[in-house]
Amino acid sequence: QLQGPSPVYNMPVALRLRGTLDVEALRAALGDVVARHESLRTVFVTADGVPQQIVIPADQAEFGWQVVDATGWSPDRLEQEVAATATHAFRLDEEIPLWARLFRLSADEHVLVGVVHHIAADGWSLVPLVRDLATAYQARTDNSAPGWSPLPVQYVDYTLWQRAQFGDFDDAESRIARQLAYWQDALADLPERLQLPTDRPYPAVADTRGATVAVDWSADLQRRINEFARAHNATSFMVVQTALAILLGRLAATNDVAMGFPIAGRRDPALNDLIGFFVNTLVLRVDLSGNPTPAELLEQVRQRALTAFDNQDVPFEVLVERLQPTRTLSHHPLVQVLLAWQNFAGQRTDLLSGLTLGDVAVDQLPVETHTARMDLSFSIGERWTDAGEPAGIGGTVEYRIDLFDADTIETLIARFER
Image (cartoon, rainbow, N blue to C red; front, side, top):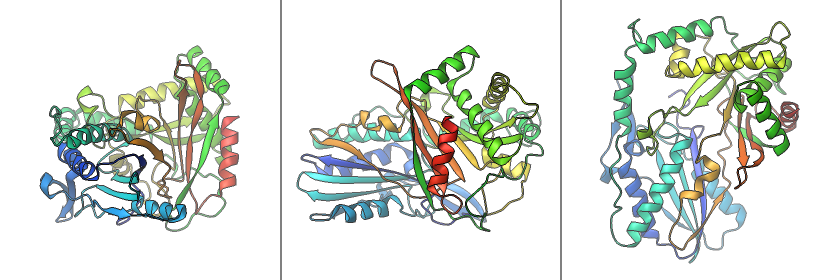
């Protein structure tokens, strides 16, 4: 509502398909997935200023399916059209949060572009989406409906369970009110913004355009991080959080550093196969005063991170509402830097492991929305060989191009690595 229709919260996936593709079976399979997951056929309408979710019937859920004849297109034109699909601006009060296009390059080569809005799905959701698509496609090529078992829950069941479990914010004795009280204390008097040096001054209204720079660290560094973590009864993520807090404190010339970090939020196995938005953003506030040793600082981060996990159920937007930072369109409230540690099975790098479309070979293509949700978003994780040995740490840093230049981000990543 704040930004209007925008691609900022799009999650696109582009796949190159080589082989004899049953186009009608693929369309039907996508329809099967939409029918299976209510979150993918939910629209968000506003009544008297209050938004509400409406799950529409499967036979009324249009996902923009179109087969585009791209025969003879140059690679540049194909890339432009793929990007245009990836940046589709959803009208969430009218359109379901899934959009798909199929580009036909030749009789045996296609590019499928699907984009899901973050309001209905998180990164984890892409794995069951791809897996269910593969199951449905196999069934449709055999002229039958997919024979999968019904999902144990739908997203609406989760929302009702959440309200029943945690109670009301206005009930001081409820679980959710106690969690909120923790956050109000932990984040009291938090500075309005982390004063990082930028290449350009903050504009009055943030430009949502963004870019990314790759992160690629060695297996040796990965091993040393894990050794340091084990020696101090911590996780590798806590070590990385500590290092980033030190760096941000130096750059911003402050001892009070706050960063955001996302959590999966799927604490019940019944949610593992469900497409939906379960992620929440927690705030890690680090006190760098007193010249602590790295070990002392890691212990502080460990304790604060664990306590944050214990109080993970307060939605981030409720924190903003209750803490009431000065609202501005210039930057994200409470935190301007996000650190995501991709350490769960089936993350996006493993996306294709669950996708088989008969004899069709499937390869993932790079596709970006060229947007930025925060000033800086680090999305990194550990890589492992098939034998379970460290293979390095990799990922990306997404940044606002109205604030930073690429070489500044590259220097920042190099300092983070050191």
